[in-house]
Length: 308
Image (cartoon, rainbow, N blue to C red; front, side, top):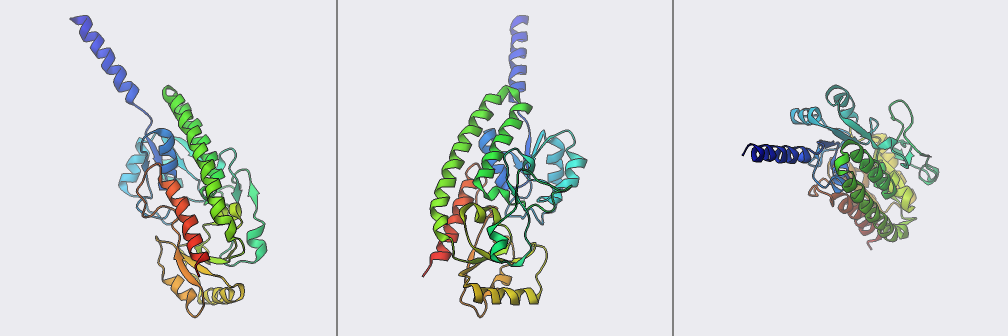
Protein backbone atom coordinates (compact mmCIF):
# COMPACT_ATOMS: atom_id res chain seq x y z
CA UNK A 1 0.00 0.00 0.00
CA UNK A 2 2.82 2.39 0.93
CA UNK A 3 4.54 1.57 -2.36
CA UNK A 4 1.34 2.23 -4.29
CA UNK A 5 0.88 5.58 -2.54
CA UNK A 6 4.49 6.51 -3.16
CA UNK A 7 4.17 5.53 -6.81
CA UNK A 8 0.99 7.56 -7.09
CA UNK A 9 2.75 10.57 -5.57
CA UNK A 10 5.65 10.23 -8.00
CA UNK A 11 3.32 9.93 -10.99
CA UNK A 12 1.27 12.90 -9.79
CA UNK A 13 4.38 14.99 -9.18
CA UNK A 14 5.71 14.11 -12.64
CA UNK A 15 2.40 15.10 -14.26
CA UNK A 16 2.40 18.49 -12.51
CA UNK A 17 6.05 19.07 -13.38
CA UNK A 18 5.55 18.03 -17.02
CA UNK A 19 2.58 20.39 -17.35
CA UNK A 20 4.51 23.40 -16.03
CA UNK A 21 5.33 24.89 -19.41
CA UNK A 22 6.70 28.43 -19.61
CA UNK A 23 4.31 31.33 -19.10
CA UNK A 24 4.64 33.50 -22.19
CA UNK A 25 3.61 37.13 -22.61
CA UNK A 26 3.66 38.90 -25.98
CA UNK A 27 3.38 42.63 -26.60
CA UNK A 28 0.52 42.62 -29.14
CA UNK A 29 -1.64 40.15 -31.12
CA UNK A 30 0.62 39.78 -34.17
CA UNK A 31 3.39 38.39 -31.97
CA UNK A 32 0.87 36.40 -29.94
CA UNK A 33 -0.24 34.74 -33.18
CA UNK A 34 3.26 33.76 -34.32
CA UNK A 35 4.24 32.60 -30.83
CA UNK A 36 1.05 30.57 -30.40
CA UNK A 37 1.80 28.65 -33.60
CA UNK A 38 5.14 27.61 -32.11
CA UNK A 39 4.19 27.15 -28.45
CA UNK A 40 1.11 25.09 -29.23
CA UNK A 41 -1.01 27.18 -26.84
CA UNK A 42 -2.19 30.76 -26.45
CA UNK A 43 0.24 33.12 -24.70
CA UNK A 44 -0.98 36.21 -22.90
CA UNK A 45 -0.79 39.46 -24.82
CA UNK A 46 -0.84 43.09 -23.72
CA UNK A 47 -2.03 45.58 -26.38
CA UNK A 48 -5.07 43.56 -27.42
CA UNK A 49 -8.52 44.39 -28.75
CA UNK A 50 -7.31 46.66 -31.53
CA UNK A 51 -5.14 48.77 -29.23
CA UNK A 52 -2.15 50.35 -30.92
CA UNK A 53 1.30 49.41 -29.56
CA UNK A 54 2.23 53.06 -30.22
CA UNK A 55 -0.27 54.49 -27.74
CA UNK A 56 -1.06 51.61 -25.37
CA UNK A 57 -1.31 52.25 -21.60
CA UNK A 58 -0.48 49.39 -19.24
CA UNK A 59 -3.22 47.97 -17.01
CA UNK A 60 -2.85 46.29 -13.58
CA UNK A 61 -3.58 42.91 -15.18
CA UNK A 62 -0.70 43.51 -17.62
CA UNK A 63 1.68 44.18 -14.75
CA UNK A 64 0.60 40.93 -13.09
CA UNK A 65 1.15 39.01 -16.33
CA UNK A 66 4.66 40.41 -16.64
CA UNK A 67 5.50 39.53 -13.04
CA UNK A 68 4.50 35.91 -13.67
CA UNK A 69 6.12 35.63 -17.10
CA UNK A 70 8.91 33.20 -17.92
CA UNK A 71 9.23 34.51 -21.49
CA UNK A 72 8.36 37.94 -22.96
CA UNK A 73 8.22 38.46 -26.74
CA UNK A 74 8.33 42.00 -28.20
CA UNK A 75 9.76 43.93 -31.15
CA UNK A 76 11.83 46.30 -29.03
CA UNK A 77 11.84 49.72 -27.35
CA UNK A 78 11.64 51.57 -30.65
CA UNK A 79 8.18 50.11 -31.29
CA UNK A 80 6.47 49.20 -27.99
CA UNK A 81 7.81 52.11 -25.98
CA UNK A 82 5.15 51.54 -23.32
CA UNK A 83 6.79 48.25 -22.38
CA UNK A 84 10.42 49.22 -21.84
CA UNK A 85 10.23 50.34 -18.21
CA UNK A 86 7.70 47.68 -17.09
CA UNK A 87 9.94 44.99 -18.57
CA UNK A 88 12.87 46.14 -16.45
CA UNK A 89 10.77 46.66 -13.33
CA UNK A 90 8.45 43.64 -13.44
CA UNK A 91 9.89 40.96 -15.71
CA UNK A 92 13.52 40.89 -14.64
CA UNK A 93 13.49 37.10 -14.25
CA UNK A 94 11.89 36.42 -17.64
CA UNK A 95 13.68 35.52 -20.85
CA UNK A 96 13.09 38.52 -23.11
CA UNK A 97 13.04 37.92 -26.88
CA UNK A 98 13.71 41.25 -28.64
CA UNK A 99 12.78 40.43 -32.21
CA UNK A 100 14.28 43.57 -33.76
CA UNK A 101 17.65 42.09 -32.80
CA UNK A 102 16.93 38.53 -33.94
CA UNK A 103 19.34 36.95 -36.45
CA UNK A 104 18.19 37.39 -40.04
CA UNK A 105 15.79 40.29 -39.37
CA UNK A 106 16.05 43.18 -41.84
CA UNK A 107 15.23 46.59 -40.41
CA UNK A 108 14.63 49.90 -42.17
CA UNK A 109 15.02 53.47 -41.00
CA UNK A 110 11.88 55.33 -40.01
CA UNK A 111 10.71 57.90 -42.57
CA UNK A 112 9.44 61.39 -41.96
CA UNK A 113 5.70 61.91 -42.31
CA UNK A 114 4.07 63.95 -45.01
CA UNK A 115 4.90 63.90 -48.71
CA UNK A 116 7.41 61.33 -49.96
CA UNK A 117 9.40 61.56 -53.15
CA UNK A 118 10.48 58.50 -55.10
CA UNK A 119 13.84 58.24 -53.33
CA UNK A 120 12.11 58.07 -49.93
CA UNK A 121 10.39 54.78 -50.69
CA UNK A 122 12.47 53.34 -53.47
CA UNK A 123 15.79 53.01 -51.65
CA UNK A 124 15.18 52.14 -48.04
CA UNK A 125 17.99 51.58 -45.58
CA UNK A 126 18.30 47.95 -44.57
CA UNK A 127 20.23 46.60 -41.60
CA UNK A 128 20.76 43.17 -40.13
CA UNK A 129 19.67 44.33 -36.67
CA UNK A 130 18.30 47.37 -34.86
CA UNK A 131 20.79 50.16 -34.23
CA UNK A 132 20.97 53.13 -31.95
CA UNK A 133 20.81 52.93 -28.18
CA UNK A 134 17.03 52.65 -28.11
CA UNK A 135 16.34 51.76 -31.73
CA UNK A 136 14.40 55.02 -32.07
CA UNK A 137 15.46 55.50 -35.68
CA UNK A 138 14.16 52.08 -36.74
CA UNK A 139 10.72 51.51 -38.23
CA UNK A 140 9.24 48.89 -35.91
CA UNK A 141 6.63 47.52 -38.34
CA UNK A 142 9.13 44.88 -39.52
CA UNK A 143 6.60 42.09 -38.99
CA UNK A 144 4.86 43.17 -42.22
CA UNK A 145 7.61 41.51 -44.26
CA UNK A 146 7.00 37.73 -44.16
CA UNK A 147 10.75 37.16 -44.43
CA UNK A 148 11.14 38.91 -41.09
CA UNK A 149 8.32 36.80 -39.68
CA UNK A 150 10.33 33.73 -40.69
CA UNK A 151 13.30 35.08 -38.74
CA UNK A 152 10.96 35.74 -35.81
CA UNK A 153 9.76 32.14 -35.91
CA UNK A 154 13.32 30.83 -35.73
CA UNK A 155 14.21 33.12 -32.82
CA UNK A 156 11.06 32.28 -30.85
CA UNK A 157 11.43 28.55 -31.47
CA UNK A 158 15.07 28.59 -30.37
CA UNK A 159 14.35 30.61 -27.23
CA UNK A 160 11.41 28.42 -26.15
CA UNK A 161 13.51 25.29 -26.69
CA UNK A 162 16.20 26.79 -24.44
CA UNK A 163 13.74 27.77 -21.71
CA UNK A 164 11.75 24.51 -21.85
CA UNK A 165 14.11 21.75 -23.07
CA UNK A 166 11.58 19.03 -22.22
CA UNK A 167 9.44 20.26 -25.12
CA UNK A 168 12.25 21.45 -27.38
CA UNK A 169 11.41 19.03 -30.19
CA UNK A 170 7.82 20.30 -30.32
CA UNK A 171 8.92 23.92 -30.52
CA UNK A 172 11.42 23.21 -33.27
CA UNK A 173 8.92 21.16 -35.25
CA UNK A 174 6.25 23.85 -34.94
CA UNK A 175 8.70 26.61 -35.87
CA UNK A 176 9.76 24.72 -39.01
CA UNK A 177 6.12 24.20 -40.01
CA UNK A 178 5.39 27.90 -39.45
CA UNK A 179 8.37 28.91 -41.58
CA UNK A 180 7.03 26.80 -44.47
CA UNK A 181 3.61 28.45 -44.19
CA UNK A 182 5.20 31.90 -44.15
CA UNK A 183 7.19 31.10 -47.28
CA UNK A 184 3.95 30.14 -49.02
CA UNK A 185 2.25 33.31 -47.74
CA UNK A 186 5.09 35.42 -49.13
CA UNK A 187 4.62 33.91 -52.60
CA UNK A 188 0.84 34.35 -52.41
CA UNK A 189 1.09 38.01 -51.44
CA UNK A 190 3.70 38.73 -54.09
CA UNK A 191 1.36 37.43 -56.79
CA UNK A 192 -1.38 39.81 -55.62
CA UNK A 193 0.67 42.91 -54.75
CA UNK A 194 3.46 43.17 -57.31
CA UNK A 195 1.02 44.03 -60.14
CA UNK A 196 0.06 47.13 -58.10
CA UNK A 197 3.47 48.78 -58.63
CA UNK A 198 3.15 52.31 -60.00
CA UNK A 199 -0.28 52.94 -58.43
CA UNK A 200 0.36 55.61 -55.75
CA UNK A 201 -1.45 55.78 -52.43
CA UNK A 202 -1.25 57.56 -49.08
CA UNK A 203 -1.36 55.86 -45.68
CA UNK A 204 -2.58 57.19 -42.33
CA UNK A 205 0.84 56.79 -40.72
CA UNK A 206 4.04 55.21 -41.92
CA UNK A 207 3.21 51.60 -41.08
CA UNK A 208 3.63 49.76 -44.39
CA UNK A 209 7.27 50.46 -45.33
CA UNK A 210 8.31 46.80 -45.05
CA UNK A 211 5.33 45.61 -47.08
CA UNK A 212 5.97 48.29 -49.71
CA UNK A 213 9.65 47.42 -50.01
CA UNK A 214 9.03 43.68 -50.20
CA UNK A 215 6.46 43.86 -52.98
CA UNK A 216 7.47 47.00 -54.90
CA UNK A 217 4.50 49.18 -54.02
CA UNK A 218 4.30 52.94 -54.67
CA UNK A 219 3.50 54.96 -51.52
CA UNK A 220 3.18 58.74 -51.92
CA UNK A 221 3.08 59.86 -48.29
CA UNK A 222 1.55 59.55 -44.84
CA UNK A 223 -0.92 61.79 -43.06
CA UNK A 224 0.85 61.67 -39.68
CA UNK A 225 4.44 61.30 -38.53
CA UNK A 226 3.16 59.19 -35.63
CA UNK A 227 -0.43 58.37 -34.68
CA UNK A 228 -0.34 60.35 -31.44
CA UNK A 229 0.62 63.62 -33.20
CA UNK A 230 -1.99 65.46 -35.23
CA UNK A 231 -0.63 66.91 -38.50
CA UNK A 232 -0.74 70.64 -39.15
CA UNK A 233 -3.16 72.25 -41.59
CA UNK A 234 -0.15 73.05 -43.78
CA UNK A 235 0.83 69.38 -44.00
CA UNK A 236 -2.74 68.38 -44.89
CA UNK A 237 -2.73 70.92 -47.70
CA UNK A 238 0.59 69.58 -48.99
CA UNK A 239 -0.88 66.10 -49.02
CA UNK A 240 -3.91 67.28 -51.02
CA UNK A 241 -1.49 68.85 -53.50
CA UNK A 242 0.48 65.61 -53.57
CA UNK A 243 -2.66 63.63 -54.38
CA UNK A 244 -3.31 65.93 -57.32
CA UNK A 245 0.28 65.82 -58.61
CA UNK A 246 0.92 62.11 -58.14
CA UNK A 247 -2.53 60.89 -59.09
CA UNK A 248 -2.76 59.02 -55.77
CA UNK A 249 -5.58 56.56 -56.13
CA UNK A 250 -6.35 55.81 -52.47
CA UNK A 251 -5.89 57.27 -49.01
CA UNK A 252 -6.03 54.61 -46.31
CA UNK A 253 -7.32 54.90 -42.76
CA UNK A 254 -6.57 52.54 -39.86
CA UNK A 255 -9.36 51.10 -37.70
CA UNK A 256 -7.71 51.99 -34.38
CA UNK A 257 -7.41 55.72 -35.21
CA UNK A 258 -9.82 58.54 -36.08
CA UNK A 259 -10.65 58.43 -39.78
CA UNK A 260 -11.70 62.08 -39.85
CA UNK A 261 -8.25 63.13 -41.02
CA UNK A 262 -8.55 60.84 -44.04
CA UNK A 263 -11.83 62.48 -45.03
CA UNK A 264 -10.18 65.88 -44.66
CA UNK A 265 -7.25 64.92 -46.90
CA UNK A 266 -9.39 63.52 -49.74
CA UNK A 267 -11.88 66.40 -49.70
CA UNK A 268 -11.87 68.06 -53.11
CA UNK A 269 -9.71 65.35 -54.70
CA UNK A 270 -10.47 62.30 -56.82
CA UNK A 271 -8.80 59.89 -54.39
CA UNK A 272 -10.77 57.03 -52.92
CA UNK A 273 -10.59 55.90 -49.30
CA UNK A 274 -9.96 52.50 -47.79
CA UNK A 275 -8.95 50.96 -44.47
CA UNK A 276 -5.85 48.89 -43.69
CA UNK A 277 -5.75 46.84 -40.50
CA UNK A 278 -2.15 45.82 -39.86
CA UNK A 279 -2.59 44.85 -36.17
CA UNK A 280 -5.67 42.62 -36.42
CA UNK A 281 -8.04 45.00 -34.64
CA UNK A 282 -11.15 43.03 -35.60
CA UNK A 283 -9.68 39.54 -36.04
CA UNK A 284 -10.07 36.77 -33.43
CA UNK A 285 -6.76 36.04 -31.68
CA UNK A 286 -4.90 32.84 -32.43
CA UNK A 287 -2.28 31.24 -34.67
CA UNK A 288 -4.16 32.26 -37.83
CA UNK A 289 -4.35 35.96 -37.00
CA UNK A 290 -1.05 36.85 -38.67
CA UNK A 291 -2.04 35.13 -41.91
CA UNK A 292 -5.48 36.75 -41.85
CA UNK A 293 -3.95 40.20 -41.27
CA UNK A 294 -1.46 39.86 -44.11
CA UNK A 295 -3.97 38.51 -46.59
CA UNK A 296 -6.40 41.25 -45.56
CA UNK A 297 -3.81 43.93 -46.24
CA UNK A 298 -3.09 42.49 -49.68
CA UNK A 299 -6.77 42.20 -50.55
CA UNK A 300 -7.69 45.69 -49.27
CA UNK A 301 -4.78 47.31 -51.13
CA UNK A 302 -5.69 45.48 -54.31
CA UNK A 303 -9.41 46.26 -54.02
CA UNK A 304 -8.89 50.03 -53.63
CA UNK A 305 -6.02 50.42 -56.09
CA UNK A 306 -7.65 48.45 -58.90
CA UNK A 307 -11.21 49.62 -58.53
CA UNK A 308 -12.68 51.28 -61.64
